[in-house]
Length: 154
Image (cartoon, rainbow, N blue to C red; front, side, top):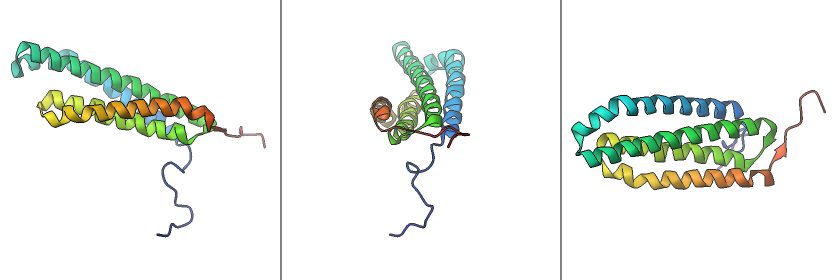
């Protein structure tokens, strides 16, 4: 397989710090909206769908999904800010792991609460593993980080 010159994988491309900050901000903003939805609309609807104990469990799961989405949205913003000044494969991997964790953990919890389809609950731990991978990569990122030269200096 031949690659044309200039074609690089996502991990080989530039830092993309702006996009990571935007995705993190969007993730945090939607976490606020989903939290409000859970606190106002969902808490009234869940008791109609499930028995009381099950409704409480579902609402707790929703709150956990919102919390983890917010934390890892902020982590994406942090990684984006770090990538402004350094190049690090570990940092880039951490951002993909955080995003995968948000989708697999929070996203599947939201779907499980709303649909009660068990497969969504089964997938949730993969999101947790993705979160841990993201934090491990963030932890090791100083070991392979290369500083960007400051503009105006050469």
